Each structure stands twice: as structure tokens, then as C-alpha cells.
Length: 441
Image (spheres, rainbow, N blue to C red):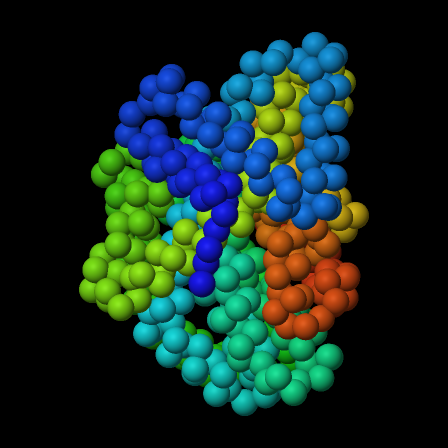
């Protein structure tokens, strides 16, 4: 049973308030509401500091020091205030994802898919894990690891578990290339709001196909069309639900004029509520899981808020505009911008820097310069860097959770076979996106 302390009730209540308030901001804004929500978020993060991981506190401290130095060197403090507006999107997105995950786990179609994947022969197990983690991850994010890890036998040896964990990581994180249910998508949409969901879906499908093709070629030979069909057939029970969700989010955004993230924040809780009304037996457990999960989001909110403050302040800092911006150059070719963004995110991810930090700072800098680059290509360059970076960063929640679920060492998972895959895919993606940029412009 969950018996939270009064302080824990306050923490959960604060983020729940920010969640509801942030959703209401999609319809109407008011300065007092925005300031009140920002204060509630700061209080939530402050109270949560004692429950966050030590490594994340160190990262947040380093970001805070960097932000302080920028402010000391002439950056306007208004940048700190401005950073809370995009942060509110994430304060609403993360609890929404918790609700979606809790709902999906209890759907009969999801459970049937899980059973079918577990029945695959060993030779196809990792292919099924790759596809299954991708489809579940598109909606459940890291919750996909809990579902997919249950498919592996408890008696499996370490090499078997490590191979399955690597496949699950590639599959889940490749969903970042198109799914709007990820923080990376929300960050890109914040800086490049002109890109529509259908555009991301169209280009993302090509990038995902390339990811799957490369992964199958590198790790799952020999394979044939029959094996792929057998693995994909396991996902048939949840295909209709996925299609309905995508259609409703796109349609609602087109009709309402809201951004993709705004549509997600409105449509998904409504769909979850409708499902719970038809399944009252599972409704209480779903709501309880969401309520409890809200209290464990201090790490994510600490990193997101810190990174957005640094990114926004850096955009307005004279020391950045006078030194870093000239290094990038106003005449920076679009292909170079596309290469710099995911390339830097991947390289720094190997060193343990989370892509959220690199991505926000660099995307903020690139979008502030008059660079001739296709919005769609740059948007997807961000998604590629985020997708690949989370596969190999030791600070990534994906690596930490999947390592725990599969019983392997995080370092083995981050710097093992997937590192080679990431480096090769990054080069291919940069070439393709540079070509797309040339075509679209």
C-alpha cells in the first residue's frame, strides 16, 4: 500500500497542479497563472532534491554554475524567466505519459501482444524484441522495457540477456524518430514549431526503416522476410489502437490549431479516461499508478528545467553570441548544422552527457542564427541525436532502466555492441538528412 508522508502529498499535489494548469494554458494564457505554475514547479523540484539521483544533482549543479557564469557575464536574467514557458510543456507531458503507460499496460491487446512475443522461438526472439520495444516504446517510452524484459527466460545467461537488452534499447529509442510521446520531440517542437506531425511521421518512417535494416544486418543475420513477418505478426493486436491514436492526435491538432504537443496533452488523457470508463475494474489501479509515479519524477524535471534555463540564457548571452555564434557562423551551410547537432549529441553522450543538455543548448543556438536550413531536416537531426545519444549515454534513463530490467551492467549496455551501431547510423543519418535538406530547400 502507498502511505505517503504529508511532504510527499505536497510534492505530488504540486506537480498535479502544474499538470492541470499547463494543459489549461493550451487554451488561454494569463500572467498570474503562468507565474503561479512556475513557482509550484520550482517548489516541486526543490522538495524533490532529496529524492533525486546524486549524478543528476551533480549535472544540475554543473548546469547551474554554467548558467551563473553566463548571467555574470551579461546575460539578462529575463532568460531564466523565459525558460519556464517551454518547461511547462514537459511538466504536463511527463504525467500524461505516466497515465498513458498505466492505461496501456492493462489493455488486453497489449497483454496479448506480449504473450505472442514470448512464444517466438529463440532464433527470432531478438527480432521480436526489437519490433516490440519499438511499438510499445512509441507510447510507453521506458515502460516498454518492463513489458519486453518479461519475455526473456529468468534462466537466460548473461550474453543472452545483454543481446536482448541491446535490441530493446535500439527498438525503443528508434521510436524517438517519429513518436510525439517523447521529450526529444517536445524539445524540437519548442524550438521549431513550424514542423507538423505528419512531416515527422513521413521522414521518421524512412529513418526507422534504416535503423531496423542496419540493426538486422549487423546483429541478426541470417534473416529473411518470413522471419520479419512472423515477428511483426505479434504486434497485430495493438496496431488498430496505435492507428487510432495517431489519427486523433493529428486530426485534433489540425482542427484546433494547437501544436502537436498541445494535441497530445488534450487527446491522450481523454482517450485514457474513455478506456477507464469502460474498464472500471482497472481504472483505480491506473489512477493510483499515475498518482504514485508523479512523485518520482524529480530527476526528469530537475534535468529538464536546468537544461532549459541554460539553453534560454545561452541564447541571450553576449558571450555566446559574440564567441560561439561566430564559430558556427551566419553562413554555416545547412548540411554542417545538421551534422553538428546529432554529431555533438552522440560524441558527448559517449562521455556521459545526457542528450537533453547538448540538444537544448545547440538547438537554441542554431535556431537563433540566420542559417539556411530546412526546418524538417533540422527537427529530425535533433531527434536522431536524441535517439542515438540515449542508447549509449550512461546517464540515460533508457540505459539505466533496461540494464536493471534485464539484469546487466549499464556500462556493458551503453558501450557494448550498440556503440558501433550508433556511430555507423549517425553517419548514415547525417548524409540522408543533408540530402533531404538540399531537396527541401
